[in-house]
Image (tube, rainbow, N blue to C red; front, side, top):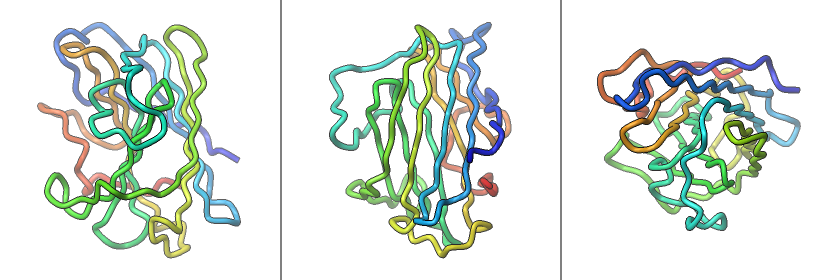
Length: 183
């Protein structure tokens, strides 16, 4: 059962995004008996900016240049965390991060399940089903920490939204010091 949705708020907006007010919320469900974490995003008020030429069959480096919802997740008490993204078209990206922007594993594959539903011209939902064992989860719910994000809009008019970050002068989601308990 998903827990009550939490709103993301805009932490940075490019000049062309002024006056736009996309709405994004995220919901988490406690891991099920198989250790799968369910996460759901709802997006509205933003006509998707997408790239239909990107594959849905493999992780897409640079997917963040288009509209995405993102989850950064630490599954235990180590500095390692994981980045998972979904686009409105169902394309995905995943990355294991040892040190932000310096050391990471581009070959990481968790096998997370995902789906996207378009609800209208400016609304969509994204569902993540994350097998926590692939992230080294220690089985303790209180060690599931992270942050949720969205990047929405065309270049020059992008909005950057976050669950836990403060407002920023330059968008940067790779700030583990702002990770918080998710459940």
